[in-house]
Image 1 (spheres, one colour):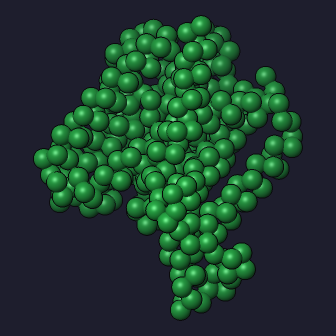
Image 2 (image 1 turned 60 degrees about the vertical axis):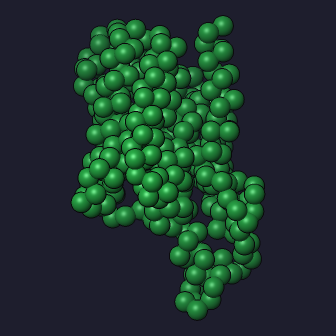
Image 3 (image 1 turned 90 degrees about the vertical axis):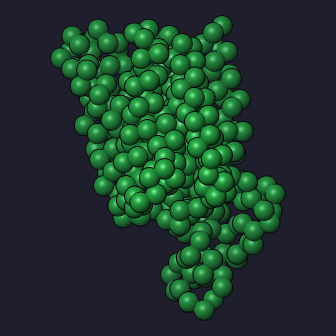
Length: 326
C-alpha cells in the first residue's frame, strides 16, 4: 500500500519538525523573540538571560523531545509489525511501566548505582514486562487479548511502583513528575545513553527486510526464508532498547508508540524501508508539539508532557479498539 501523501511528505515532514523545533525554543513561561533565539544559537552571549534560557534549558529539552519521540515512534512501529497487532504500544503493553518500576528500584532500593546504570534497569524492566505480556497472551494473535494482558501487567507494575514510593516519601517527591512523563527533568541526553540508542536503531535497520516479508504473513515470510524467531527476538530487543532509553530520559510517556505508526502508514505506506524512516520523524513532531502544549496551556505553570500525549492519544486508542472489536 502506498502512502496517501506521495513524495511531498519527504520534504514537508522535516520542514514541519524544524518549524515545531523553533516554536519549542520560542514559547514557554516566557516568550523569547525570534532574533534573540537565533542569536542564542549562532552568537551566544553568556550574560544574556534569554540566551541562557535557550542554551541552558530549552535546547537540551528540545533534544530530549527529539530523541524520545524518535525512539517511541520507531519502537511502536516495530512492535506492531512483530506482534502483528495494530494496538501494540510500549505504554499500553506495560513495557514502559516495567522499565519505570526497575528504574525506581534502581534509584530507591539500590541507591549506590550511578546514573549510567539506569538504562540497564530500564532495559531489564522492559524485557520482564514484555515477557510477562507474551506469556499471558499465549500463542493467540488476538489484539484484544494482548491489550488486556498488557493492561494487567502495566497495572501490576504501576501498583508496585506506587507502593515503593509510598514507603519512601522523599523518593515520591523527587520522582512524581518523572513517573507521569516529563521532558524537562534530566537536563539533556547524557553521553552514556547514545550507545544504547544506536544499538536499538541498528537492530531496526538490520530487521527491515524480514519485517517487509513478514507483512505478507508469517507463513509467506517463512516460505521466503525468513527466520521468524530471529526476526521477533531482534524486534523485541530493539523495542526494549528504544523504550528503555525513552523511559530513562523522560519517564513513561504513553500513546506515542500507538498513534505514530498508524500516521506513518497513512503517510508512507506499509513498506518498512520508508515506514521506519517516517515513524521516528512523526514521533519527533508529536512529542515536540505535546511538550509545547504542556508548557503553554496553563502558563506560567506547566503540565507533564506525558499527560498531554495521553489526552491526545486516548481517543485514537478507543477508536482503534472499537474498530477492531466491531
